[in-house]
Length: 73
Image 1 (tube, rainbow, N blue to C red):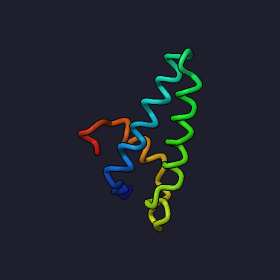
Image 2: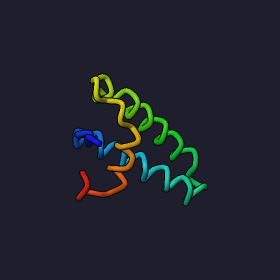
Image 3: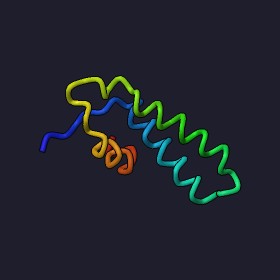
Image 4: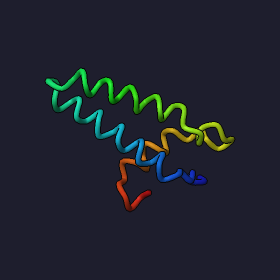
């Protein structure tokens, strides 16, 4: 399997999305703020220029790579 090469900003954006999602699960009292942040991050991920390229259909791989941490970037 060929591994996708993601730009660093895209990996960091996915990590921010993951952190916000986890915070939403942990802190329901901040739900409104966190939901708005999650929506903004989701939109930025969806419309990132990387996904306009022919090899840009690797969203599951991006999520996996973002979970690996800095060493897997």
